[in-house]
Image 1 (cartoon, helix red, strand yellow):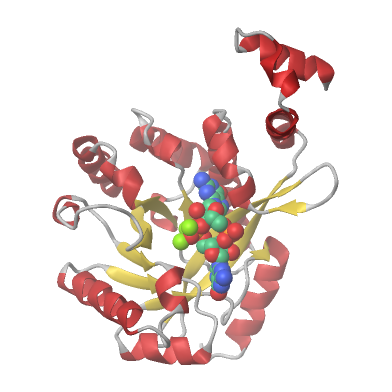
Image 2 (cartoon, helix red, strand yellow):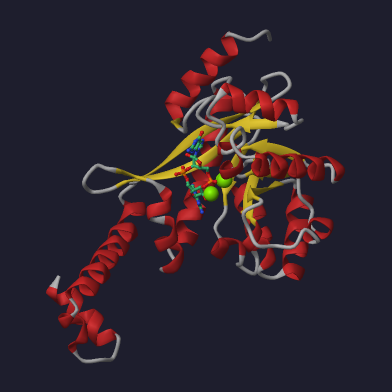
Length: 290
Ligand code: C2E
Ligand code: MG
Ligand code: MG
Ligand code: MG
């Protein structure tokens, strides 16, 4: 670790200031360690995908599932994405991780289909850096063709800030993605700092109502008003709505009453490893008329 700190100090082209700021030093070192571990994680097969079902409000039909990455680190702990995706973004590993997520998602979709389990659409989270690639849409199309998956089986979850980074380019990219057959969701809708004007210019399919609004739905009139507005807006623009983070029956009932289209959250199921998801879906299907 002394070597790593020395390297870092040298790389920054300064003297040994770092050695005299122990706290800073420790945080830089742990960050460096995380980066090195992440670099190995792909080759070591330490990433895992979890799947969380989304249900139609009206009839309980499976709308699809969201794909959520986890990392089983050297210590065997399951690390949630918020702890490593931002680092992967910063150090440029997100491209390789994103490619792996897409490939594994396609493989899993095909495996379930071969086993007679129909999961209409798998929704994949895209990072800002992936989306900013000049050839993002073409690359996605090419990868899916190589993987033998129909783009209609894949939904891409994007955030407002990603869309707003370069509005003109975004419009063209979304146009191309739609041509290829992907569907597009805005994740965490309502939490970004963006003008509503962009909704007129972008080809979108789904607004995912952020879980912060859902959580406060029954306690906070403002949260309810925001959810009502999102649903009204979506309806007027012919977009679907999915409520995220639905944990209670009271939230579900209120969302349904307000006309929300679909839901995702612990009330339905937690994100599950592939085999548990398959078992969950089989049991779920069994309890429903065909
Ligand atoms: P997100 O896309 O908004 O995903 C929803 C998050 O809410 C997930 O956290 C999920 O486990 C959690 N969640 C679902 N239902 C409930 C609920 O009822 N209550 C509560 N409290 N939470 C619920 P997770 O899996 O930790 O993922 C966090 C974020 O990491 C995701 O937020 C997404 O932005 C990012 N992420 C996850 N997988 C990937 C990936 O493969 N690539 C990229 N670039 N980002 C990813
Ligand atoms: Mg998401
Ligand atoms: Mg979200
Ligand atoms: Mg989020």
